[in-house]
Length: 552
Image 1 (tube, rainbow, N blue to C red):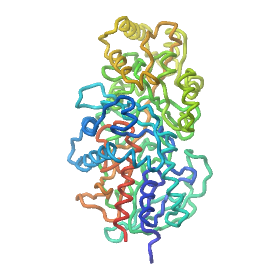
Image 2 (image 1 turned 60 degrees about the horizontal axis):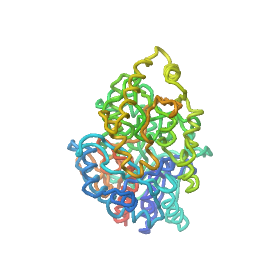
Image 3 (image 1 turned 135 degrees about the vertical axis):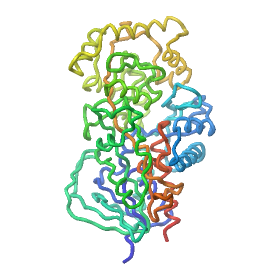
């Protein structure tokens, strides 16, 4: 019997769409199999802020940033801290990706219609030594249109190829098995799920209406990671981050369940670096949830005072936006799975942003008028909605009332002592009496404002928190938010899945989060941010081109 297609792609997220677009340009026939309904086309990327890691870009140069391939690679390797024998391919992917980010990545994306917000963000600032963790310079380029803007050029290309018969979709098709003839992967088998009209991101039914088998010369796994599967997250949780949280909230839709990783492993693929993962510590419950335990991440500027559950300030250099996983490890070592920001109205109106396309209607809707309004009209509307309706936000004019409500929110024995919290804030405020300071957060805050982008829109002028003219005071309870799988299926630079002996599993490829964004974990232990969407794009491009060369 003839094959149903040249290539089958499992997953209609960003990485799968990029691979499909490359296959279509090569004239290959592709079927995209997706367990979710058509309205969820694009997967997790739709919900993202659209951050893209670029090196030595025109946007950086216009902001006075001097970046280079060598500096970016040094930052990447210092952050990844590769130290395992199975890091051979992840490191090669990291080197290739940094070369892509410093080379043709921007022009390639621009040719496809992608544009970037002119102010470059500075994520994962490090705060340690020059050879250690973090970005030495701002590299976080927000796509104009956020996540939907990242998807748009690839969705357009895939839909156009669909009109010409090169690509077809099989929505509500859930893969249970990769079929093989001998050792060669030659197709997929699974269940046809009942039709679903739930809106994008909501949990869809898993009732079975039938089954299917599809055949092809190659299969590309583009199914994402495990972020919504808390059982798997806890099973793979690394001891170096402390014990797994008793309570987690979720930064990805329910369908990000990790099923395909085990299925690909059963077909001979090697799954490596299972214990490497990326979860945020600034999670808040969405007051208008879409998926189960729907969480939003705060993208904080550097000014908020960060306290643990007992009111003790987090140590140097665990400041907002500096080192995500080191902060996660510290918080889990306190014996509690949450922490607190304390800040002022002046800080929140300039420094708080919320991750996600739906929380940034100005950038998502490509409205310069609304963007300018964000900078001039006080607290951004999405943030104000959380202040008014979010269960994790507390606003009070004085510190005693604030601390009392903080204790009431978590319940049980009061953990916060007013005297302890007040001592931390007053000591911090006294450090502002001089233009120099022993407080490293104050020093870092002043250094941050030396960057024009932060001074304009992301960092408040240093001020005393207990001065009533800067109030009211605000407290935010922060929870652990699950997000990304950094490990995955081991792949070579053509995205071919490797088996236990290091040889490729013939006919099988993996991309995006399912492949640890390349190689089985190109980020190593930690990420520099803006690298997840880019990893999906780069690995999808590599797989699409390699599969196109391999099939007849």
